[in-house]
Length: 203
Ligand SMILES: [Zn+2]
Image (cartoon, rainbow, N blue to C red; front, side, top):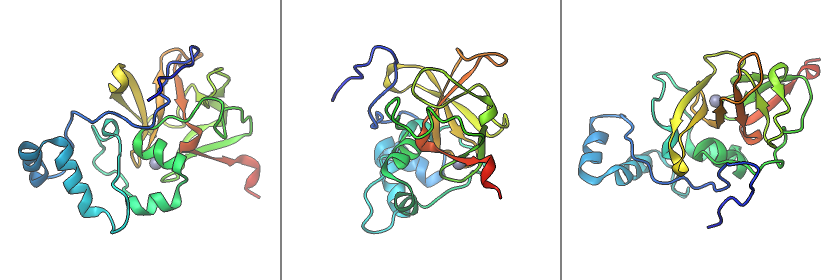
C-alpha cells in the first residue's frame, strides 16, 4: 500500500477506508447482530439481504453512514454500480478521493450548477467556485446550507469534516476552514461526485 507521496496536499489517495467503529441504527435485529457478531459481520449480513445475486460485496466506507438523515433517498447498490463509473462509485459510495488534478471539474470555469452525481440534487453554484490550487473543485459555500451535510470523519488517523449529499448520503469530499471570504470555508469536492449542469445548456 502506497502512502500519499505528495507533499503539497494531505489527502488520502487510497479508496479503501478502514473498518468502522460506529453502528448504523437500522433496526432491532441489526443491533442484535452487532452485539452478537460485531460491526463488520452485522453490516455484511444486512447488506447481503439487499444485494442482488452476482454483484460484488459492497465496501462502502463506514465513515459516511453516521448521523444519517431520517428521510434520505436510497438507491439499489447494483443499480449504482451499473449506472456510475468505477471512480464515481468509489468516491460517492466508498468515501474515496480522486487524485488531484485528474478530475473533470478542478479546472472548469463554466457557469452552472453542480449536482450530485447519484441523486441529482443541486449542491454548488459555479458562482462560489474558486481557485484553491489543490487540484480539486473547490467552493466557499453550498448552494443551500441544507444541501450538504457535514459529518466528523476520523478515517486515516485524521479528524476532518466530511461533506455528504444531504439528500442521498453520497460522499462528496471534505470541508476545511481555510477558504476565502466571505465564509472562510473550503468545500474540497471530488469531480467524480458532481455533474455540472451548464447554464447555457437550457435552450
Ligand atoms: Zn445525492
